[in-house]
Length: 80
Image (cartoon, rainbow, N blue to C red; front, side, top):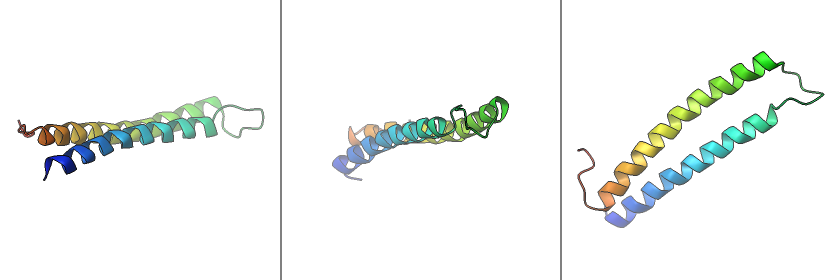
């Protein structure tokens, strides 16, 4: 992969991390406690925790791939 493409893909992976974090914040904003909310505190906590687990896994993969792609763009061996 050419270094310029690897650098852009690595930076794109980090930008996707920001999008994933914004998606979680939007989910939390949508399920926050309000006077007309249909979810109680326990159900809301379980929903936040389960969505956070999936999104943290996605964040970890994107950070790993982004770091490897940036290392590849610098000419380093990303497998090491």
